[in-house]
Image (cartoon, rainbow, N blue to C red; front, side, top):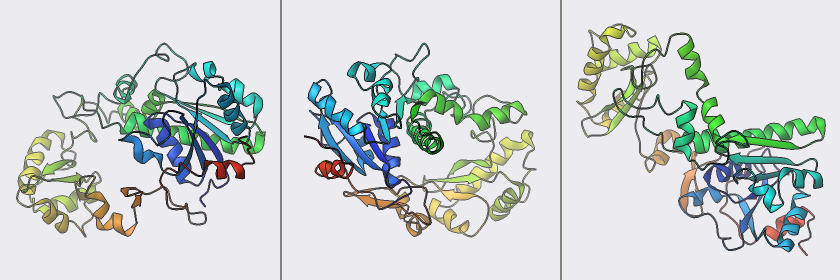
Length: 361
């Protein structure tokens, strides 16, 4: 089940960004066959192992002519091929776009890299933090007067990487319905990181992002958009950007002399007031106080606590996959809901390929 039911994806095993993109396609119902190196067919090493879900796997040595021929036969029956090599590696192995599109002109060929397929940095190594650095996404993140802080590896690897690749694949599949032709999707984490900064560029251009790091609306500069320590050392998040939510915030906290929300000169005073009040109760107590108040206030939970939050529980936002609790597939579909994700399957690849009418010989 799922909206991508019937779509066939061949994924060359790669690092987390490509694995995440393929996981999304599998979550949405696609048949995803992951091709591992023959020396490693038991899933990705931790911590990326949870990204294995929803796939079947087969082990091949692409330097072996027989295994390479097997892979090409498989791809002839596929809709999507995804790889995460540096530029030129797939071509040297004989599975570049020209090689595979010649055999399957309807194939969507997805390439997941950090720097993209061209440009001076294309052949260089890099990681999430480097892609954020030159895209302009890293500099604004962090408190005022301090160094930039990497936001885990969420922006480059996953939001600007794997998610972008999956979106590109879906767009190419949609276009194929009218053209009948496949094409190459060049998904680069540096491009995706830049794309995610579009809103901030817009704010800057209209004068709403005038200050250095930590001095603007969404970078902890605004006291009504930040986190505050509670009596127990835990934190509460505040996102009262709009006037009606700000009014609810200061009213619920009992701050009678609160300044006008956008009186920038009094922001330091407001921050001190908010900090002093939040310090008076524990995180759970404040969560209870604001439970029925529209002030955009929520407790800051750890990843281990998040699955047990009542809202996440009600929406079944986390599921158990092979004994590991992890986020459920998203988004949700009313008519074609996806099946619950399953762990990486190392035994039914032949059954999947039989359904594709591929003879492994």
